[in-house]
Picture 1: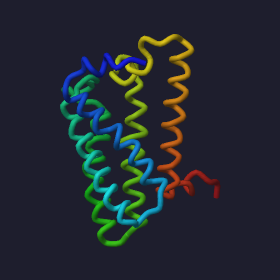
Picture 2 (picture 1 turned 60 degrees about the vertical axis):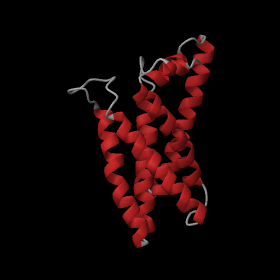
Picture 3 (picture 1 turned 120 degrees about the horizontal axis):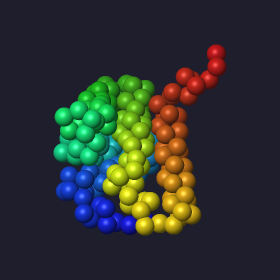
Length: 169
């Protein structure tokens, strides 16, 4: 593992990493811990701010140039920004079921799915994790990152109540 790719990355990428990493950890904590407490409400506001800041930062990152400097990952960013409003509104109205589904969807799309895209070769996070490592170290790093993303995804699916979609009827 090496931090050189991040140190040499543009400011927008550095800002993005500085907001997304705490958002990923804080989001997992919020999804796993008891809900409705004053701490949950406060940390939830911090998490949502981090997610929106992370999403806005992607519009200054154009490493994957699919269409005029933008890529499908930017659609996830747009989703996170737009889904933040109904997530907050549902919580304020007391519609906790809708709130849980919204924030779990934001976490799943903005952290888990987008996180998978960061491991594509020649992206900063992929280079940080895999460059400069032996084959065994790279394999172990890939296994650890994969496990964390699968666990985060499973947590989001559970909290959103999407588990019923996977069961046979």
